[in-house]
Structures are given as C-alpha cells and as structure tokens.
Length: 85
Image (tube, rainbow, N blue to C red; front, side, top):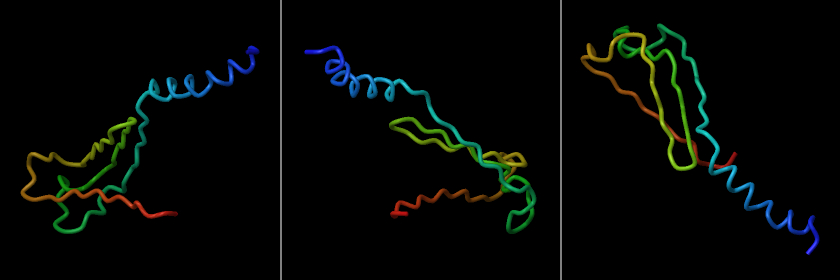
C-alpha cells in the first residue's frame, strides 16, 4: 500500500480523534438591561446568557442584574427550534 493510500485511510480516524478531543464551545449572548416585563425587579432582569456545549451536553448560565436569592418569583425559560431552516 502506498503512503498516500495509508494516509487517506487514517484520515477519518484522525479527524474523529481531534473532534472528540475538542474543547467545549461557548457563546455569550448579551441582553438589554431594564427591559424585563412586570414589576421591574432586577432579580428577574437578564443581563446575558452563556451557552456552552460539548459533544454530549449543553449548559446555560443565565446572568441576572440583581440577586436571585431576593426573588419572590421568577421564570426563566429556554426554547429550542428543531425544525429545518
């Protein structure tokens, strides 16, 4: 077998190994402060969301303007659009 043919056969294995060893990917999405609906309490005002994913998990870190421990009530929802396009 020539060297180039052996390299071509090893390429998919090398690519898979690199993909599995890839670090987590993160994105930070800022949000306008002071635009929350309702009472205007800062503990429900989102300042940004950090999304991190690996090959098997996805994590969301929701950053608030105020202190969440003082919240009387709050809903934080995440939606997924899984349709094509």
